[in-house]
Image (tube, rainbow, N blue to C red; front, side, top):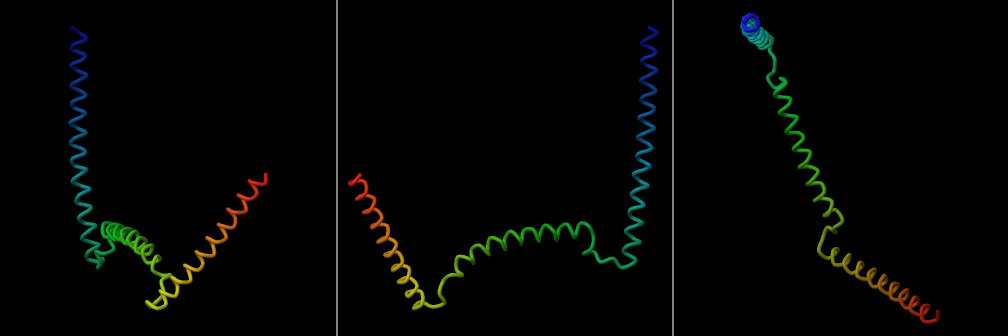
Length: 123
């Protein structure tokens, strides 16, 4: 029975400590809240631009990050158009040049294949 009473006493002390801590934290919370309000009023009175607050700057930072991603995407899309000629006749000329280059490459490839075939037949 002595251990039950000791246990009960211990639990009562713990409950009192928790209640004391709860009261302390509650008073501290009220005190900090009033300090924050006073500091905000003081900052507002000195003419703080709301666009310079932490929340506003973080919001702008997120917007900038989004715009940078969008810009990078658009830049990649733009790069595909940068090599295009400025007019339709010039585009046709460019297409013909590329076709000629392709025929030359195909001819070289065909000659190399024929050479390889000849070497295999000889070997």
